[in-house]
Image 1 (cartoon, rainbow, N blue to C red):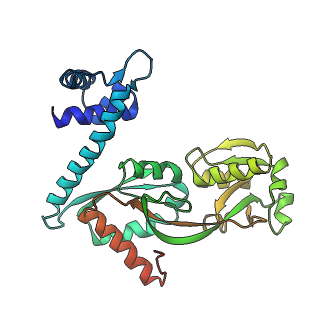
Image 2 (image 1 turned 30 degrees about the vertical axis):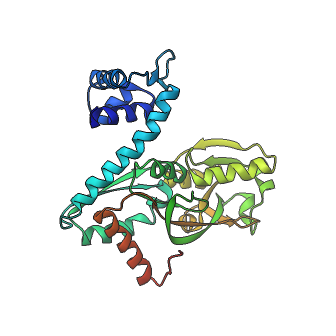
Image 3 (image 1 turned 135 degrees about the vertical axis):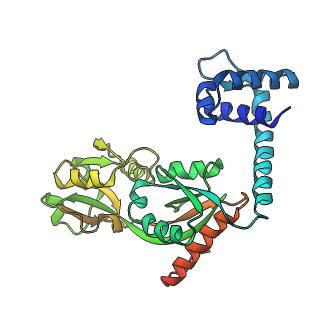
Length: 298
């Protein structure tokens, strides 16, 4: 049994597709197919049910996957730990950032960090907060700068800012004259929503569902500046964090009638080994917060 066979099996099980697993691992499809067949022959069991269009695990395959994922994670952590005996000369950090937060909060952090640690490579992955949390849970990212309110207990959290959810409406809209926006105001409003995987989208949809309101969603986008432009043009309204909606031309930001606040911050997996490169980023964020007289919440 080879480590490569286990890695191929894990990726195929995760993506439920041999072709996509091959693309992700940058190997040929036959390599993965042959490796999995050899693994099945060695174990004397069938790991995948191939009778359906989508690849799915057999009961035996599910049990095997649970066990080997822990083993592969331990191996990965062991390699990282051994490499950490070397001085912090190089390293990589994978960070997930939502487009909304990334455009306004992350650049200030990243530019200062890169200046101090020029030898470290930082890779950014842009998705919604909810999707990034899932990637962290699956050990696919080192960090996420996300909305951390309601995050899973398995994640370590470093709050960096508290923000209020606001409704952003066209400046010439009748709603713009109000002091706050209520759920009833949304019954007749056109909504521009962030795409699936966004914390704000989930939050708004949950509030509307609880109020028995079926939203009129006219457009979906994860491009914040595009949404702002659409609002200013009178296409509809949307929801942002307050620091993002500030001073947006042709729009007005209104607090919710029942205010909702969220914490934005750094998240990472608790039980995952922290490399020296990753620890350097955590320490840098902590120092930056202290310099701004912000006390991180435990």
